[in-house]
Structures are given as C-alpha cells and as structure tokens.
Amino acid sequence: MEAIETAQSKVPRGLVVVDVRDLRKVYDSFGHRVKALDGVTLSVKAGRFSAIMGASGSGKSTLLHLIGGLTRPTEGQVWVEGNNLGAMSDRARTIFRRRRIGIIFQEYNLLPTLTAAENVALPWLLDGKTVRETRRRVGELLKLVHLEERAEHRPDALSGGEQQRVAIARALLNDPAVVLADEPTGNLDSKQSAEVWKLLRRIADEGGKTILMVTHEAAGAAHADEAIVLKDGQVVGRLEPKGSADASLVATGYQELAG
Image (tube, rainbow, N blue to C red):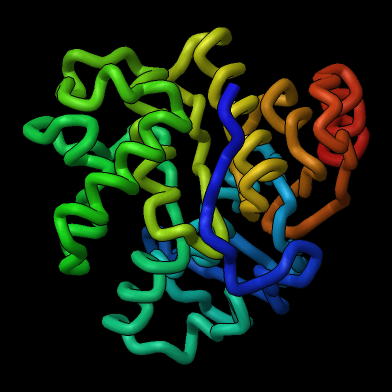
C-alpha cells in the first residue's frame, strides 16, 4: 500500500489547529428559540483524528458547520489555523474555507456531468491553477484513494463508496489545515464504511491531517484518536479509542456519557 504524501501544513503536528470558544448557536423555529449549541469550548490539535458523537439534535452537525465557516455563531468564536472566522467577511471566509478547509458531505456533492478526475480538480480550476499541476495533483490523490483506474468515470458509474472516496480526494486537494467529514458513511454499507474509516485513519497517521468526523456509529468513532460527545448542545465528555477500532469500548463509553 502506497504511503500518503502531502505538502507540509502550516500548523505542525501537535499544535492547536481548531479552537472553539464558548460557542452558541440559536435558531428561530416557528416563533421559538432553539439552542443548537450552548457554550461549547474545545480544541483539536494538528494531526488528530477526532470524532464528534451525539444523538439527533445534539448539535454535532451544527458544530461542524460552524467550524467550517458554513454559518456564523450566535455567540462565541471559531479559530482555525489561527484565524478568527467570525472576523472575516463572507467573501474572505469563503476563500479561506476553499483553500484551508476540506469538507466531506454525506451526499458526496459530486457534479454528475463531470468525471471523477474533474470533480477532484474543480477547486483548483476555480483558483486558476495550471492544467499540468492540476493533472499531477489529481492523479496523486486518485491513486491515494485507489481510484486511478476510475478517473474518467462519472458519478453514476461509481458505487457509493467510490463516490465518497472521490469526495475525500477532492477535500485533500488544497492540502487543507483541517478536514471536516459530516456523516461520511451515512449512505454506505458496512464494508464500504469500514474502507472510508480506515482511509481517514491513514490520512491522519501518514499525511498528518487534522480530521473532525461527525458520526453516530461507534464503529466509526473507534477509528479516531478521540470521540467528543455532545448532548443538548453541550460537550459532556470525551472518549479515547486511540484508533483501536474497538467499537464495543466506544459504545459503552458513549452510553455512559450521553445515555
């Protein structure tokens, strides 16, 4: 199996790359104020694979969206790679997200008319990179996710697991400071899910990438260094599976914290 090669991230392994301070998010729903997050404070170090767990409505996806700059907090601050996302204009935040944050969605978010290679390349095409350097980088990433022979296939010719691996390659294109994965295996079967979790584990270990993954599956969180458990919009504890892949350990610990 080939080693993962990436350019050096700006934040050395072990230093804080994500810093969330007293984060609150309130939504108005039919005249009622709903607290999605209620004073979340946490930090994640570079090179760590962290899972975010919680029941539906616990605030885990909201937290991920705030860290990704996809929405603004009601109160509190989100710092990524030393940058306060809340202090940025919408345009500056969009550019920062495209260049320094990789995002993997449950639904893959691939353009159906583009090939696997073109979907991976899209962020660099938007940034005006040359065809030569884009082709080289895309080739490296498709090899990394074991899809080099599927480069010219469109999404409808790929399995769900293959589509998600294309999305992972695209998320790594800019050598981001952090990779956010929102239920990345929600549409996959158990075999494909395990492949994705193992791939994310390798990217953290060999590529030194900081990964935050929202998941409701103990088997997925067990591949992470730590699992941050949310309940009612608050952090109620952390588990440390340390990449052991011991799902029973995570499931038991999660029930004690969130049950």
